[in-house]
Length: 131
Image (cartoon, rainbow, N blue to C red; front, side):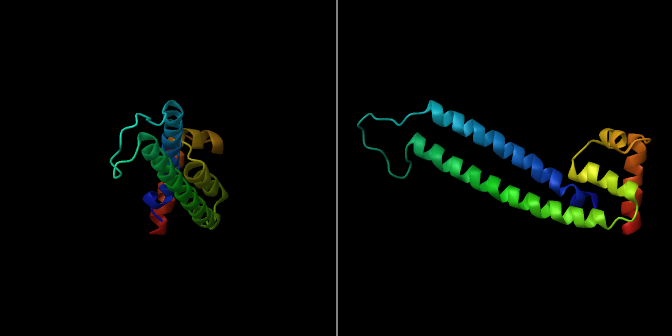
């Protein structure tokens, strides 16, 4: 497995957070918007601001659901890979870094008795040995 493959869950989590922020922003906009009742006919192809906002909310919610499903699948794949690592310290390093998303400094503190550079090198050494 490569670093890019191992980092996939992190990227999914980042996109999930972006979607959550966007959804919160859209809900806030929805509260601030009201339908335009001016009596003038509208172009049916454009729709009202409220309709557009509702459609965007549905799209973002759908994307969020898809990301959550992908996150569960990726988590299961990572856990299978990590559980096959023979060394318990390395399993701890991989879990802290790629499942929990900790920085190398935090991984070193989590593992204990190591520096960020040492845990990073141990991870990379293991991955090179798997090639």
